[in-house]
Length: 442
Image (cartoon, rainbow, N blue to C red; front, side, top):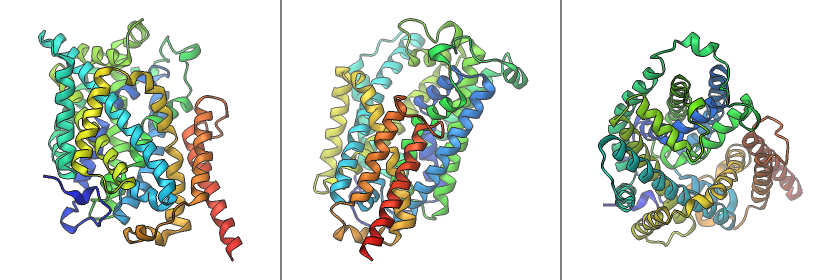
């Protein structure tokens, strides 16, 4: 049932390569997931509609550029993001980075199962009066996602191709509901929500940071799926379609629907109300009904299958002797247990910061691949790979520290976007260290 070569450090076979739209369908499915809708809602809750759209656009453009480059590397070198990290950081250095990747992705897998069972349970109760036990929803969700991961890329691709047209229709209906009472000029004339003062106030730079922080990890690990694209240029088209069109449209749809419904003033900051509660209420208020089920189930299924898929890739890149089937099943079980124990909420901030430290990895990888050691990015080089690429590891560590401190407000953001400061800084530091090292050798 499983194609081991997807997870092992072996070349992608010719018969595994596909046209770029099939991979783009997978990337687009992530854009239709609940976290993307919530990101749009959050940005519109702090800015006027015009400024929110600008923030979403510039944030999406930044992520698109990163995704174009990393996706291209994956398609060109036929390696997952974790094998690319092994080349860039050396075996020991990559072990630290990849374990952090695995822990973070596994944490988000558990959180998304928790989110899935909570939202689907509430929707079933609100729409049909059916109370579904959490344990049944969690086991069902994990089972479907684990089986999909075991089958591999083909299963994820098949589901995405099947579900994307459905989700396009549902999102279009969602967007249509936003314009039921207001025209585009009405939205453009609106001021920011009344709640957007004090700690709730947001600048366009803050909105851009929200988008970049929420989406950029997907762009960094995009090679996991673009390595299957037949033509390298298709990876660029995939990133543009996913981040600059699909995710941007989904975030704008959610935000405009929020403005139109008045949810920001009446419900957004109510005591005991989570952002998920707000999104569910919004979906039901605009009469999405079964469409809300489709968004949550389909989006969560693909997003979490990719989370688990990438977790397995990360673990296999670091510990290649692990049995892929039992590793995948074991991780799926761990996700269910963590979701049912409801312990992941306490680790959400930790997982957020763990995600932040991935951002400088892209800076190091891009510089190493295109400017420092472009000739070593081949599967064959892994047999004689470095134990530790110290300049790369140091540049990543500095960038990670800057990213965390900037997010906490301890350091100023030179660009206004902490994630970009960290990415650019790590790239500059690594390039300088690499050049300095070469001069010493010569």
